[in-house]
Amino acid sequence: MQMRQAVLFVDDEKNILKAICRLFKSDEFDIYTAENGAAALALLESNIVQLIVSDHRMPGMSGVELLQRVRERWPDILRIMITGNTEITVAVDAINRGEVFRLITKPWTDEQMRATVNEALHLYTLKSEIKRLNILTREQNTKLEDLNKNLELKVLERTRELAEKNIELSLAYLNTIKALAGAIDAKDQYTGGHSARVGMYAGMIARRMGLEEERVRRVYIAGILHDVGKIGIREAVLLKPGRLTREEYDEMKRHPILSAQIVKPVHWLADVAPAIRHHHEWFNGDPRGYPDQLKRDAIDLGARVILVADTIDAMSTNRPYRKALPLEKVARELRLYAGTQFDPDVVTGAIDLFKERGEGFFKGEEEERFLTPDVAFLLPQDVES
Image 1: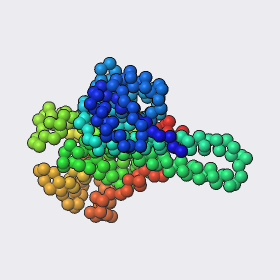
Image 2: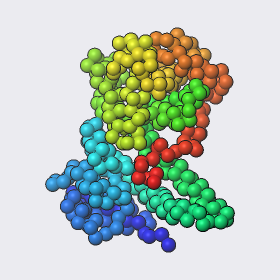
Image 3: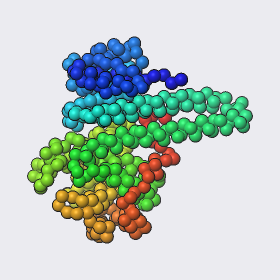
Image 4: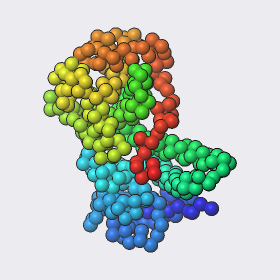
């Protein structure tokens, strides 16, 4: 029989804690509350908890400091932080020091809070099951010489089961990433779903170019995350309907750097940071490229693919100043700038897909095609073994 799960909510405002208790009173888990970090740590010493949800701004001990201590003392407890602060330093701090599962920004909705908590508890169950299967597999492997063929088949079945759980867990991690990217896209009615589409197009083009499947999957992930740094750009700049001033444009050009800074502290995402940082570089090194004015092979291949995928989505979706362009005009623009803004080989891969699929290109592919069969690279090391 599975043990009943428990969640600890930490906030210095009693009214918020009461509202949260009302929200989850009928759910299938126990609820603990604490009004500050010290009380939360004391409670954890004597109670088993699977998830902690903490406010960031609290007297005495901040949410980041509390979650860092929880990570160090009870690393298996999943961590969620609530914050009204959208500064990039807070997000990076929470990811780097607290290794949070998710950031919830104020004001949050009941639906958002409930979905996030339930997703975290599901993830905890998956991780626990993977640990159990890993232990069982290791025990069986030590006896492998004495096993008969029937028992060997059981080991193979356990291995298959473990692989399936790893795939499910990788999808859960990916959904966390996509949720953060989607929150950025949702700020602008014209960019809804942009990050997911760019990831999809980038993965399709990379595969058409003949890249190895692991490389294809990394390009796909980098495409989803390419604009996540826009969380650090002021909304007045991000959503400005008119032309940006020079100062505003300079601020906007910081988003690839911020995006790379967000993913780099997460060790299983660190190696996609170059593709994210350089997705606005021009292939010929033109100074209009940013942030580092790299050229040709000095630009990460994933970045070159993402630039073309990003451009395809920008041209093929409706914008305030123009309607979506048809496929043939998108192809014409890509050919026009091949060798200057775009890598000609990437353009060729995209055009070949256009010819094969026509308008069906924009339907994309099932995301599982970019995550199976090898998903180990997506997982933190402590989950893999």
